[in-house]
Length: 113
Length: 115
Image 1 (cartoon, each protein chain N blue to C red):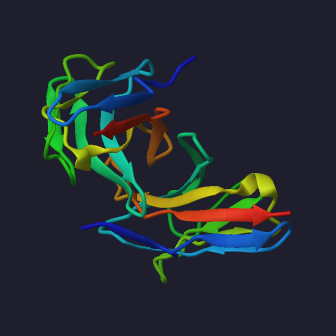
Image 2: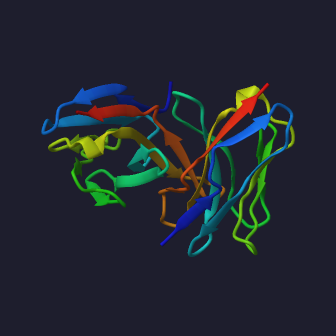
């Protein structure tokens, strides 16, 4: 079945540091890939997505590129802020007829001033 | 505001009690689903529905029932609550985008504690 593996946390960075959160996946067919963010005490928000190979999703300074050859969708940001402190989830849906998400376990990011 | 509405936001149950978590969406989405979120486990699919009158099991269905009598509502029933069902529950609706791929809208969650 489908699966998503993302780097274990927690991750602690200083403000303005570079962020990478690794995500790899296993799926049949042609999955769409997503990053969701959960701020403390809140629900899930879509951060960015990509629906086909080589697509780059971007939002709020975050980027991720759909790499089919390495089955990866790593999340990056060039300069993190304290307000980026949250839990980040990588997820996929396996395409046609799926309409359900398979999630990674989440990576907690803490950014310190 | 259009979206997915979950009630209640917080609930404490005693072991063996039953309750229903409510989920409603006003976007006319065909597909709805329930997930539970546990520390270090991500979100796992409990049940899902592809339309009114049609439901199916996800990864962790035991101890939960669902029904879908209307497009808008997708309640999740706990038949006899157990401490292992202490979790945060998210309802989601999804739709097929005209440009391809699916869009997902999540509710704000219900935090359930079973004592």
